[in-house]
Length: 253
Length: 268
Ligand SMILES: Nc1ncnc2c1ncn2[C@@H]1O[C@H](COP(=O)(O)OP(=O)(O)OP(=O)(O)O)[C@@H](O)[C@H]1O
Ligand SMILES: [Mg+2]
Image 1: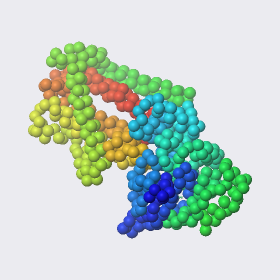
Image 2: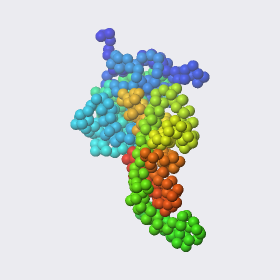
Image 3: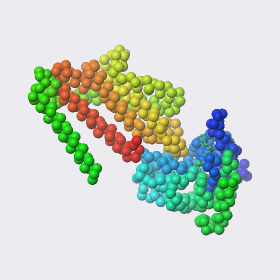
Image 4: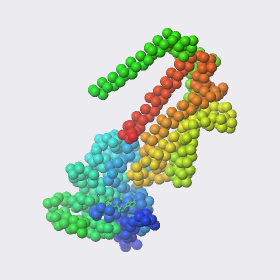
């Protein structure tokens, strides 16, 4: 045991069937295995309907499945604060809590009661997502991009092992999206945290990922490579074009 | 600016309407055009105004109307409180157990159809004529619409809030309290509105049908005014009843809405 490499996340032979034993039975994931290193930023690409969201939800513990998911070698079947999910939906913040309370509520649930510490952590993470001073707003007063920033800040405040992100920027306009990409990149390089990031956007995967995985039908992994392009990546970076072509053809083969 | 104008307009129109109405009333009252009963059907505004004050100073049977109001409100609040707590309990348990949910759903649908006053004979046979009967009716009036609303609210909670809650480690009762309740606030508030309206009507009807001597309320008061043909007092009491309704609407329900769903941008 001790000789084995200690991965932060191991997905072993995970299978997921929706509506099992009914007429609409759907084999979405078949025997998916995936090992993720600590502090990796894993970007996951794949055609629509191939099971990316389902895989992420299984890892997060929102779905039942066959197989196992272990975090730090410990099996996890239920949701927990070691794996925090950032959804695509802008409406993932509790509308009845201010930005500040949205961030602090899960911390309080973790047993952090000290007002000073709560305040300090909130300020720290809001600064990371460039939302300092917006503590008192309610979610409905924020733009979509700001809501996603708060969702990221909320995840960071919990200091989870893994942050799971399901196309968090997909519904944003191109400009906001680019901005958030570069901020997430900076954050991911500063934080000691592992990211699994689903996207449809090849550029996004190349810019953000230290590792890129392409899934096909049934969650079959068809590409799994380290992203060797020197950061920060721009379309002018060396190797960008070839990587893009390679991923693109894997995606649409 | 336009909005402001519109408001002033609306206010002026209503004020004129009310004044004209009062003038007509006063004219009819003074002219005695309704014959012998004129004074009974249309007491003059001065008489009603006097009666209004007399209600509070002399009251009936040596007890001021304040006391009657207090009694009614005490029973009403008691019933509301019990009803709301029970409704939360029923809806909460329904979220935990599917079987409980199915049964609860049936019970709510059936009892919601039953006006409280229709239950009076049964309740009196069981409990006798006691203030408890009124409380029972108020509970009955609040419990079913409230439970229905809270349950609907729980079922309408977006899955994403539930999952976000579970992700933070909430489960079972803590999930119910931390996510379902706040997320269903707009439903809970509308349940409260319906519940209050039904309870208030139910309370007045019950009190008019039978007065509880140990705890006489507004319904009993207005009924006594009728039997004694104190019609000016009767009208004055109607005004009081309307005023209580307004106080609850603008003094309690609206503020609750304002500092919850409105503040959170969640109103439906
Ligand atoms: N709750 C569910 N019940 C039944 N089938 C489901 C359910 N959720 C997902 N599926 C099915 O599982 C398959 C994979 O869905 P999933 O959402 O994981 O795809 P995806 O890769 O995330 O797609 P996209 O890129 O469009 O988001 C789809 O065929 C979908 O219809
Ligand atoms: Mg998806």
